[in-house]
Image (cartoon, rainbow, N blue to C red; front, top):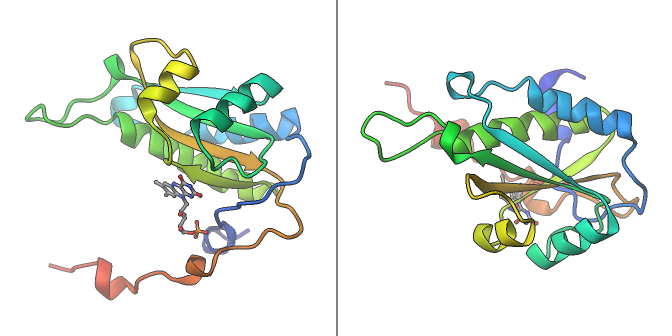
Length: 170
Ligand SMILES: Cc1cc2nc3c(=O)[nH]c(=O)nc-3n(C[C@H](O)[C@H](O)[C@H](O)COP(=O)(O)O)c2cc1C
């Protein structure tokens, strides 16, 4: 698929089939995440694949937005392995997790899987429920699965601002 077609085809899927994601497909999209760039190539990401009945029940405690997905990826990062911006007020952790997640979301679409990026959860509560180590922060959950036949993009999927509103040439 040409990249812009792929980018247009991706949408936030909110209804999944009760069909597991095959291991080879999961590994394919995780590989896409592995290839993502990160600040200073620190690769602070740690991806938890939630797919067991118990883990999915935990996911449902963390967020109301699983939408029946058979797999949820919890994308954490090692807070001790991030790039600190000059000035010390910001670091790359959430950005690193986000570009890994972006690779995964688009790779998933390319092989017939759908996804929904989630931040409707309390990161501290999620961290506790998933028993993540102290050094890790969790900023992204990704639903992954096969779209139900009834799934379709929300109307706002087509609603993107024109470049004239979001880009300034100087
Ligand atoms: C950072 C981020 C957080 C999001 N969090 C949620 C969420 O918690 N629950 C949800 O249902 N959708 C969530 N979404 C999906 C957005 O609502 C969706 O991408 C947006 O409305 C545009 O729709 P589209 O993805 O179908 O084009 C999130 C998307 C992003 C990028």
